[in-house]
Image (tube, rainbow, N blue to C red; front, side, top):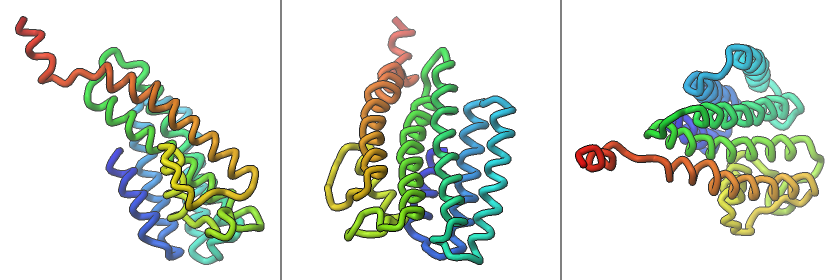
Length: 208
């Protein structure tokens, strides 16, 4: 799951042609399905998301024949944002029900953190495609490479300052992402890693 997140990021920033939308969406479907399956989410939730994924797939295929900046393209990107919103919730819900913390929950928490960054990136892209002015003003329209870079810079509160949203909605989302990113690190990820005891750490205690 973690590898698929990284590969999706690389695919988004590496391919800009119209056909790449379908490729990226296919990778997102695989990533989200694996996340839901690993997190043992409810069958009804997976069923509802399967409908959403089917619609998103149809929109992505239609996007091969229309302008990527059209409302159809915005719908596909919005569905992608919805997928990345659902994934970390399912993963964290599963982790919270586990009695012990091993390697899998730790990697799951890291993947969930990356899901949050991807969610905001696709949300920024949706806003940028729907608003009449460039998302970053004179700095750029807010294509996928820009919003992914901006999202993870904001999520980690690095704050280079070279890109920033010029409208109120974009700025509000950026503030929300920075706050959520920090809360996620100091609560979910930090607590899970603190509770994690690799097997090689447990053996001396067992021998005593």
